[in-house]
Amino acid sequence: MQLDDLLQRYFATTDLSGVATDTLSAGIEHCRVDLGLEEDRGKRFALWSFLHMFGSAPDLDVAFENEEDREAARNFMDLLAASEGEA
Image 1 (spheres, rainbow, N blue to C red):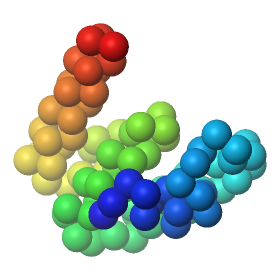
Image 2 (tube, rainbow, N blue to C red; image 1 turned 90 degrees about the horizontal axis):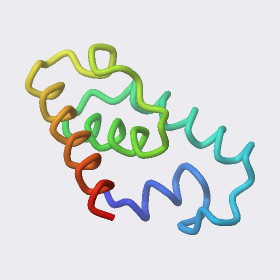
Image 3 (tube, rainbow, N blue to C red; image 1 turned 120 degrees about the vertical axis):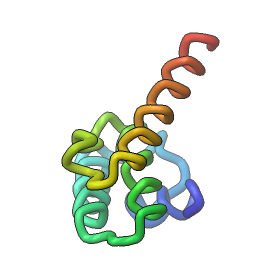
């Protein structure tokens, strides 16, 4: 999954600067539904990560059955937090 593809799919644009609030909310909700339906572990992780960047990801125990996936998500959150501290 490519970021530009996800942005286009859920928000109909790759430039979020002009996206209306209701369009953003609808896109996030659509992504949350897709996350709930997705069975492929890699795609689930990509969708969860995408939602996390918008502050809308479900809790790890809800999103991931597998402990390895939850640990990968924790590592992702730690990496993002560390990169934000460097900015």
